[in-house]
Image 1 (cartoon, rainbow, N blue to C red):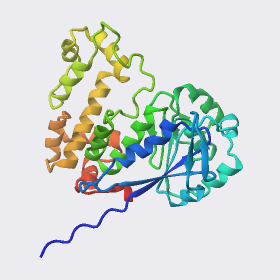
Image 2 (cartoon, one colour; image 1 turned 180 degrees about the vertical axis):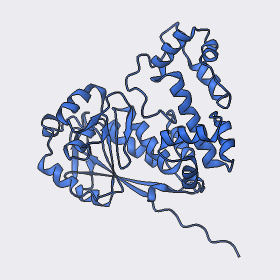
Image 3 (cartoon, rainbow, N blue to C red; image 1 turned 90 degrees about the vertical axis):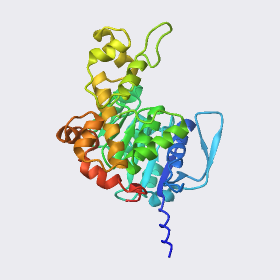
Image 4 (cartoon, one colour; image 1 turned 60 degrees about the vertical axis):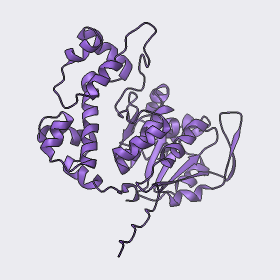
Length: 336
């Protein structure tokens, strides 16, 4: 007798709040990233819906409006609420207080709902008190104003995104992609997130602590970059790596290489290598049954103790707990 097919997962509902003056690009990020996340059977892992304070046309910062079918009552059904940026936040931006309509809309959100902001959408979460005492970020150009307006928020102006469990914030524009990919990775593991990134043609992982403002995102003409060294490292994560070895790949001095690397990647070579090793460990923990000592060796951490230290620091859980959560092929953590 054939085994019964496993039941289809219930997609995790994401509701995006569209506010007047929104940026169409940022509004589309949750739909693009979450909408591409599928389980091994090709079934969607998220359901993405959009609501507005009042159903109907919503102004954008472009030369067109969007028509939103749902009103704020939809927020009561969300497991995750995303607030993208807007250029027309009014008293939220000017005085740090919610309008009556916005306060009424946010009142629909159930306790325990995951809250996410992209760029200046963080002003809305802060004005509602959701960010008090928590780490948060926003676009670097608004960070000083954001901190003055909301002194109870622990603003980090230099990072791409922050993750405080049930409240996550991102810097501007493309950092919203990084944050949504991070959420997919947190919910469903590296393999699902990497597939979403591949289909979206974006880097699979930029760490949240990476700098927002990178001095030289692409090499200047006639100037050597550090991309060859990074590719060389990815083939040797399991080996001891010295900074001098990396610099030699680009025929640079260690000092020049270190400066150029930080300018291009936004982090030091050591930080970048550690991040890549954590990603390799995540893949091994998700996809293999290797013992922890073997995972540590393959990822370049050397010992299980070192593996545990770095995974705990990066992910907030031990390698054993991470494997337990993600080893099942069809896991859908976003349902929890």
